[in-house]
Length: 271
Ligand SMILES: C[S@@+](CC[C@H](N)C(=O)[O-])C[C@H]1O[C@@H](n2cnc3c(N)ncnc32)[C@H](O)[C@@H]1O
Image 1 (cartoon, rainbow, N blue to C red):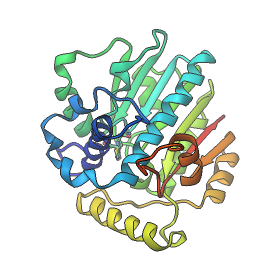
Image 2 (cartoon, rainbow, N blue to C red):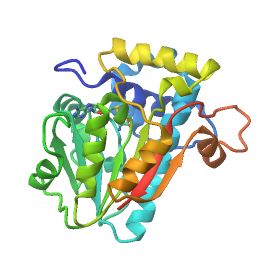
Image 3 (cartoon, rainbow, N blue to C red):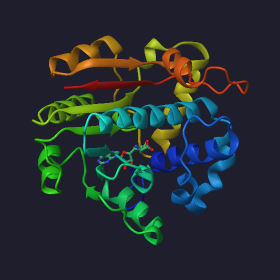
């Protein structure tokens, strides 16, 4: 990230959600506030419009996350933590009166978002936790902000792991697993570039070059089997790992516009 500026990839993810609202039918992910939070920066629209597989992936991971959240709330979970919340608008759309929401993000991104949404006021039940994942202890920082680690927590960690060192990713998953109340986490990650071929590899290389130029290079990738083994070692169970085939079957079946995911994987697991 560039010092003093909001994350460029957070802006791009929000732009993809905003474009989805007005371009694609049927919607995979409904986010009526996506354009509001983004504001005038939507000038990047023309450039992003053609990046349909990335838009499909960003919308599918958010829909999967909010589907899983609905299940968690139905089980009685009352704490939702967004790690690297970016311009996610769930807290402003929260339909669950019992759910407390914690948005943890880099202060530069979070400050920018808060200024964008100042007119709307902070929603009830939302706590902002400005922090740097690479420098601050996760559970202590969240506890200080009011999250109760001895009560169950539902966590989403979307669009963040590729920007962190592998050790930081596994350390974070370990810290989450250490919370005594139990945790369910939904996160996405990229597979090693060497495992990709043809057009998918070419698209991956183009996107990797773009995010690196924006100062947010991808630094970690995981083999699905290694990641599943690592998660199991940390005490995670019910590990679901969905790649393009599974995401397309779940969210993009029966469409005639060809919108579909080409790369990227989403994990759902709980302790
Ligand atoms: C690609 S954005 C994803 C945002 C959001 N989850 C979404 O899906 O739209 C990555 C987010 O991770 C945050 N981030 C990246 N590195 C971070 C760090 N070291 N500490 C805190 N936040 C970080 C950025 O501020 C940004 O909001």
